Length: 533
Ligand SMILES: NC(=O)C1=CN([C@@H]2O[C@H](COP(=O)(O)OP(=O)(O)OC[C@H]3O[C@@H](n4cnc5c(N)ncnc54)[C@H](O)[C@@H]3O)[C@@H](O)[C@H]2O)C=CC1
Ligand SMILES: O=C(O)C(=O)COP(=O)(O)O
Image (tube, rainbow, N blue to C red; front, side, top):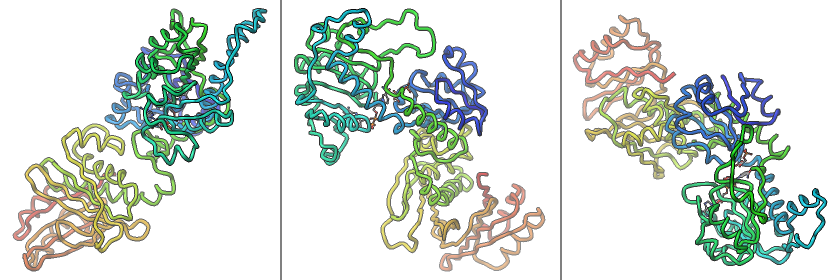
């Protein structure tokens, strides 16, 4: 496996990767060069600078994993990665403390004009009157986005005896209470009442430009503003105007709408904010500490390695995350789900319209189990890579409706998957499956027949009239083609005079044998099934 490190990560992370993969470190690559070389790599590791967009993914036919050595993934086209079955992993917990501490550093810096004053002193200018600041004590800090970093900032700033309020419509009041922060019901509320505002939301379609002219206009005169989250959350042009007028007394910015290259040439880079005396800008330093980069490097390396090995990772952005213990528990159910999904297109050819899957209450992580069913379903019929990442997306792209639910109590099994597939002709194919003990996979119902069948690599499903002699024919025909029957499950519906046979065989059943079987008097259908390797 080949891994391209396109932005700097720690040596500790590099060492982890080098133990198991072929690693190439290429920092400061020009875009054209990156597009040219990416085709050879299975994994790409970036930070916040490189845009991992559809053009880059198109140029990377072998790419299986993108590792974001950091938190924000706004530089990665997640939808496109998902469509292509590329796993995106990040390391959100590894640099949160550093980002929070940097934010606090910036708050203090602009409250006391520390960077400007320190800079003046370097030029022998000791005129301290110019740099009189304000105290934090007793002032109101408004935090927009009370997630990982926002809440770390809140907890720490309370030590300054600031009143901390926060606006985050997506978290519960209990979390506000737990952190000990007053809830601002609206953004307007927060803007009107804060002496210092700091923003900690991710960059999304909803949050871009969330602080613009209109919002700045209702802030307190003399407000101080910090952005250590993402450039573009605060409209830079509007902020510039408000800083020039003095309405915003000062701003501290770690992130810009358009950022320079951190390894390459930046000749001609310009941003008007840089020139303003009441602005402190750092070069996207929030995560740049020894500790954060060590953690980030090691975590991203481990996540990328797990993903390359086909294991679930704990920080995947486009598949549900599962911890290792839980993964061990549900692995047999994932296999069962994939097998159940894989039956349909080996039995029927009419396109699927709806998939309805019901799970026993005892089954956890059902979202992944559905993804496994969909992966099994699509595997035989799509050319592109199908995996847990894109199976749901590819089904939705094909107009397949996916309905998931919980089974009512009263079934005989506590861990059942009940799968009903309805095709465009309105026909239904239905299976139920479960796992006995730790990992004994069983199909327990097929088309209303109670069965007890352990799926095998090669199988044969036969529906026939319930009359003597049919089994004999089947054995003879398979024998002629050298196909050995390993297991056999026979069941019937006496009242209808119909029977079902599910056979596990030691080798694939040739098409010619199937043709002969369906011509046997009394056999209604014969379907050869092969499981995905
Ligand atoms: N400057 C730097 O070097 C670093 C910057 N970051 C940035 O910080 C951001 C936040 O990181 P975390 O706290 O870990 O993320 P998080 O996901 O834990 O928290 C984000 C919070 O924002 C809230 N939110 C989302 N939309 C909102 C809206 N419209 N209004 C109010 N609140 C909203 C969410 O509900 C969530 O609670 C990252 O997305 C990243 O862009 C992260 C690390 C370092
Ligand atoms: O983790 C984040 O979201 C950051 O913004 C840190 O970015 P970086 O990895 O230092 O380029």
